[in-house]
Image (cartoon, rainbow, N blue to C red; front, side, top):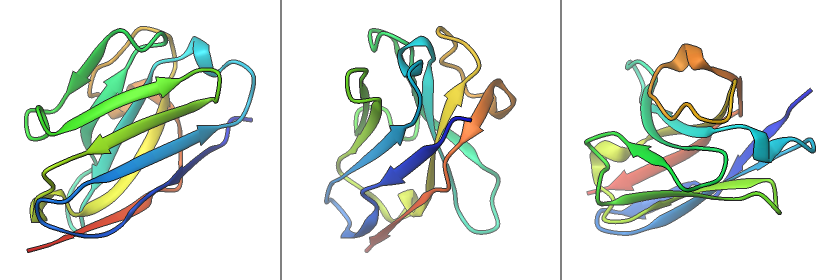
Length: 125
């Protein structure tokens, strides 16, 4: 059973930064692509960013491109989301997810088979 545990959320002013972490259990972390999604109240879960198994290929939603950076440390079984120049519209619960394979870095929720419990990010104006 794979467990994903997010951390690093909190309250920040607009223009500030946060770094989210997602620690994964198991010895096969490096074999899978990973993604970050977010969900605001009353809205559908949406794709934020994804990274392939090696960390060399990434993909971002247009709304965060240039502000957020996804990375991973396979030695630590951890994926990160560095969020800069935060905006009030970034307020949401952020989830990390494991893809079912090593290469997919797309935005389809159905392509990710394990999910964390989420961490809340609130950006005040």
